[in-house]
Image (cartoon, rainbow, N blue to C red; front, side, top):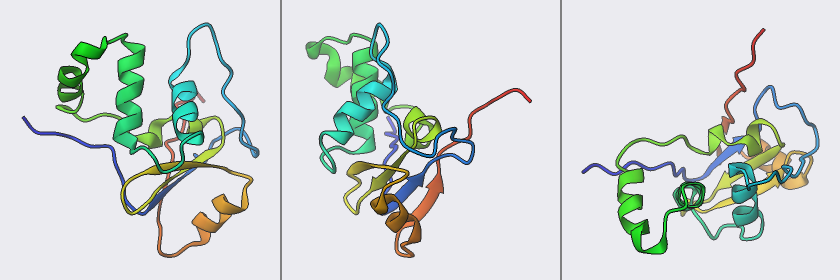
Length: 138
């Protein structure tokens, strides 16, 4: 079975062109945690600890209430087909966070207004991609 990945290396995901904020915002907590809430908690509190795959898998496991004893098999199933990467995350599309993937594929978040965000955008040695635009009716 082929294994797919969402990991990048030495890449910075800039906020989407149509991101509605110029200063990063914390996603509101609703009745249940959203994917953006889970992603923000994991990555903001643990910069460069997790890969994109680690975070997106954890989101899948939590959102689907997969018990501990079924997680290994669920991970195989999850990565057996392509998954949306962090370019589709609401953190970059809506809430104003850039995502840096280091040489090991580990990720950290940077608010759009921060000096670090600007430094990544200006760094010629880092590949840049934009978060996906939101699908909005015109």
